[in-house]
Length: 429
Ligand code: IMP
Image (cartoon, rainbow, N blue to C red; front, top):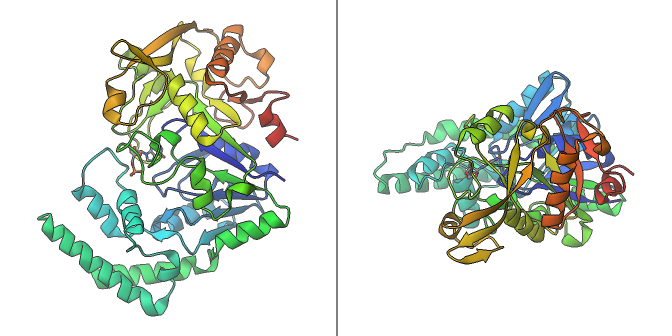
């Protein structure tokens, strides 16, 4: 059985939720490996729209095990409210969900700290400060939260430290320690039944012949190490993170599938060479409903950036690429694609190490003719207009990665799987 990673190839919001939801029936377990409730994975089933933040999209399939791995940071109140919302819709979350005892716990002081620190246009969920505590070896993990004897002491020491820090910043931040402590102790009892050693659970399942889908959050260009630092999130959103964030070794991973839009978007600050700061950019935003599913912020919109996709494919060892939201481009007469960057007189094909470097580069575009007819809902490759097929073939040639699947709308049925592709082999046989 295969264990496949599905991740974002750009700056997040590529439509991974739909793809995971659509194909997770082929897998026994779906696991999230990084991030927190900064993620928002939208899944549309008929008239119902679900936005999942912490819980893997597999939860919407009865009987499927959904796992939150050790690589995540968990706000227990956010987790419980997501659980309640899903339960109200008839999903048996408690029976299907497992939570790692090694995931880190997010506290209100993490959110407060985020406001004190340098702004890069984050989601303001306290994600970065919680990962900072993890890397600084002063974080509190789920197993600590469940330890009735020690949690109080640990939390009080951490809260005192944060208060001292806030004072140093000249902010009279006050943590109501007894109140927050009691709140978290109560939350701990509610999550306790789901908590276990998920690395053991996953490895035992794999050994028993079960298959696992790894659901990435955010995107490769937001990866803490490989993304457009410092305009990144604080976790490992690329394929490597799937191993560290779950405890499943690299030797057990069978394939990596990247998801990219037929254009590009980014939320928050940071370089975006192909951003379309004109009426066409606005048109894409409106047609693509490009507003953050967690924060509601308008997303910045622009063109496909081939050097960035190639870099992302290399970092992830990508076997196949899914292109989503093809129909959003339906009305365009011409579609520019960035094929290289220009720095002075030089043409550069790689993503530079610094954000400043990327900001100063000029994209070199090639323009492809649009198809100016509706592709919405098309589910067979041969039914796509010729220019849409040309566009996809061009991206495939330029990136060197097969495009195995194309999404032409939010619904499950609005999807094309390319016959004979590696993607079809992985998900449909
Ligand atoms: P943080 O993850 O809240 O620390 O935000 C860091 C950067 O990642 C900001 O630019 C956010 O807009 C971006 N970001 C975080 N989560 C997502 C996501 O799920 N989709 C797209 N961008 C995200």
